[in-house]
Amino acid sequence: MHFDGYHFRPQERDTVDRAARNLGWIRALLAGCDGRLWIGTESDGLAVYDLASKKRDRLQ
Image (cartoon, rainbow, N blue to C red):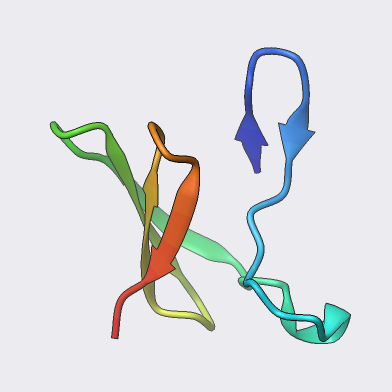
């Protein structure tokens, strides 16, 4: 979930399949010095969320 000061917004995979959007359980969070948020998930591995651009990328 992302809170913009007014609303909570879910962080999901970019896909048209609604069943495949869920990232699973979040196991770890780390705020980077560069303003990015590192997210360790149970089923989708490691992802990084850029707060400035509001985009999430999955790392291979």
